[in-house]
Length: 250
Image (cartoon, rainbow, N blue to C red):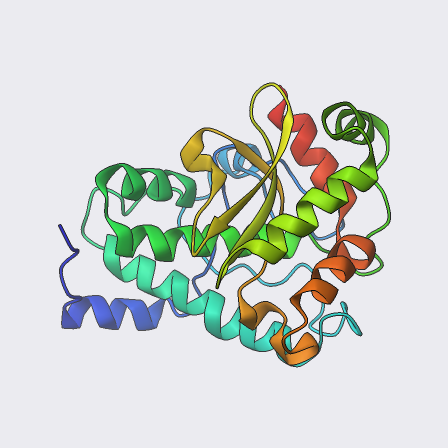
């Protein structure tokens, strides 16, 4: 059934946590492979850090991804869109048995219970936190080592992976995400619509690309295909993806 409307107390609490955003801790996420990475679940547990939905700062400066993704895009995308998902999700879990859960757990519970409103906001918080870490200044190119070997094994070639990932991003109708995930046996490319996330299908995401228009429109207008190409060729943080892959296989 639909979640209750937020009370005055809930709204005041939401204002107090306006800095809250995406998930600091995910149930399967490894530590990131770049300087200044946010703590993984294992690191958070060791440090006795409370797990909740929070808006972590970007892992790079707002101008760091220029000229592919500009400062205005990152500012609006992170500080407005991402923050709103977090704030609404926090309002919706206040006073429930999910209030102390990490974000991935909230996403799974909301999905199982059919709570679409909570799922949309919690999943979008998770998705965005993951997306920021999938990029880095001077990124792109090709992965190496075990990840590249697995890509070649499962897709035949890196070019074939890029083709499938590009198709997923460009054919997600309306708003959505393109994903590279580990399904327990092999790497697979998926697309999801809206806030969808492969974790609801038992898969472990290791890379995502946001294809909601607010992710690219100020820089690319209607040219989503160009954004998708630039994402893989110039933005992907393959160190982070490789770390995710290694952790997923454990």
